[in-house]
Length: 263
Image 1: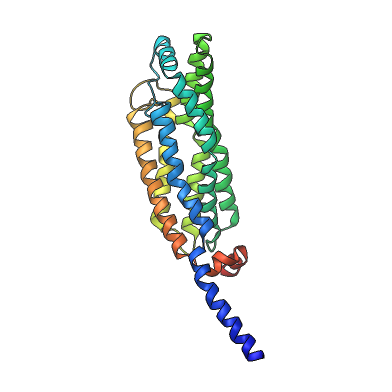
Image 2: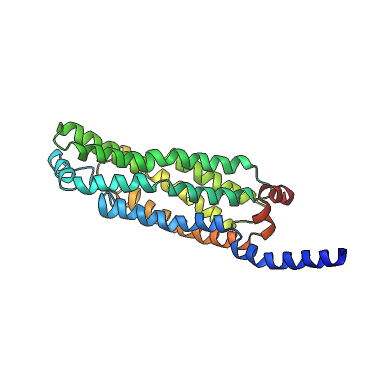
C-alpha cells in the first residue's frame, strides 16, 4: 500500500509541474504588460487629447492661452477622465520593479521601498496635478483670464519641473543595481539610470526661462530629457522581461521565503 501511495503521489506531482511551469510568474507578467498599456494611454492623453506634449509655449500671451483652453476644452476634460482611470496602472509597473529589487543580494529592502515611495509621491506633481490644472481651466473657461494663466503655468511647471521625487527614484535604482551581487539587472542599466538624474537636473532652468532651450518646451529641458527617458524606459522593460524569465520557479512559488534563503 505504501509503495502504491508513493507512486500515486509522484504521478500527481508530475501532472502538476507543467501547470506550475505554465502559470509561474503570471502575476508578474500581468504587471509587466501593464507598462506598455499605461504608456500607450499616457500618450493618448497627453499627446492627442490634451495636446500638452510637446508643451505649448510659456511665452504665449493671455489671449493665446485662453484660446488654447477654449479650443481644447472638451479634449482636456476627456483627457483628465482617462488619466484618472488609468493612472493606477503605474502602480503595477512599480510593483514588478520592487519585486525584482527584492531579489537582489547584498541590497537592503530599504532601497526597494524607497523606490516605491518615490514613485508614489512623484505621480501626483509629475502627472495628475498637471491634468487637474488644465481640467479646472476647461471646466470654467469664462473665469478671470489671470486665473486661467495661473492654472496654465502651474500645470506645465509641475508637469515638466517635478524634480526631487524622480531624482530619488533614479538614484535609488542605480545604487541598488551597483550593489546587487546577483546581477538581477545589468550594471549598464544602473549607468543609464544616472542619466535619468541628469534629465531631471536639465529641467531645473524651466522655473527661470520662458524661451530658448531651457524653457519648459525647450530643446534641452524637454526634448533631450524626454528622449533619454524613453530610451531608459525601453531598456528597463527589456531588462524586466529578462529578469522575470530568468527567475527560478522556487522563488516564484515560495515568495519572500525563497528570497530570504537566497540572501
